Amino acid sequence: MAALSAWFWNERFWLPHNVTWADLADPAPGVEYPKAGHLFTALPLALGIFAVRIVFERFIASACARSLHIQQGVGRRAQPNAVLEKVFTSITKNPDSRHLDGLSKQLDWEVRKVQRWFRHRRNQDKPSTHTKFCESMWRFTFYLYIFTYGFRFLKFASPWLWDTRQCWYGYPYQVMTPGLYHYYVTELAFYWSLMFSQFTDIKRKDFLIMFIHHLATVGLISFSYVNNMARVGSLVLCVHDASDFLLEAAKLANYAKYQRLCDFLFIVFSVAFFITRLVIFPIWVLNSTMFESWSIVGPFPSWWLFNFLLLVLQVLHIIWSYLIARIAIKAMLRGKVCNDVRSDIESSSEDEPDTPTDGLQTSPYTPKGENGTNGHCAAAKARAQNHSSW
Image (cartoon, rainbow, N blue to C red; front, side):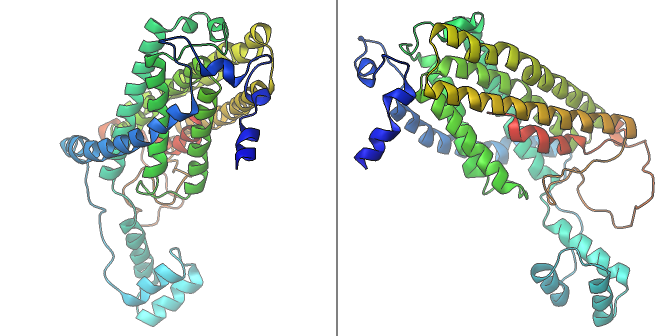
């Protein structure tokens, strides 16, 4: 075990040349350098954030949803039927024509009635719009708070916001200030809380992918903290936080059926996403981590790994930006509903239709200014939220 620990904390991997752990172990009075043990504070804080979320969704977000007349139920429920319930739970939730014909003969029902039963039964398993609204309102509130806090901290207390070379002057002998520590630990705790809450959140079929994403985010934040790259890490966090709350705001408008507002917010989100991920991140952050740090500090093994991970992140930014742009253009030009590909359970509509709509054109006139693009906010979530963080 000691040999494994010594291998993992090898100075030649983590630190620049001619720097040892002993050099960082005994700082001057009043000076604090980042230490791996600091990150354990995030775990109890994550549980606290999770508890706050439960209270927030139950009393604040739920009250807001009711004031907007967002229904809490799941619509029509399928009438109890032991035969169909067994098929639904054990065989298939979407029976093909062969199954439908067999069940129709067995129950002496019309095929259309059997189809309708399965539609109603699937709808029973869907979370209500009320539930989805409360979840998005919590995320919107936290994302807006953490972005405001982070930007304010960087603007008034961080010289490296205006001169990114300050991220590397004196590295790794850089003091961990209380403001930077709280920013980092709060972000880390939030993503730990997302890993906890994923087991109780709206069920999605990309559960494993999102779990791995949250785990990777926790790993990247922890890696940059332990390596004392927290200054440039704070810039990365702020850049990624800049668009997250806009996506959640668009989803809130979508659930409240204010579709014109949803469309507007989605466009604003898309623009902010493109600017922060395709312009600011590579020109401002990557330029500093790859070139300014090279000239000031010089490369070392963990430096190579850190930049490799950031380059992978930038490739993902390009891919997801393309997909978001395609969704936005398709929604604006065609005006068709675009379901969320992340899940068979989360969708922008409350229930599946009771009548077939294949081949029918939807009306361009919908309540509260809807223009027929309802759903693209939810669909974009599949592309944007996976990489809205590190």
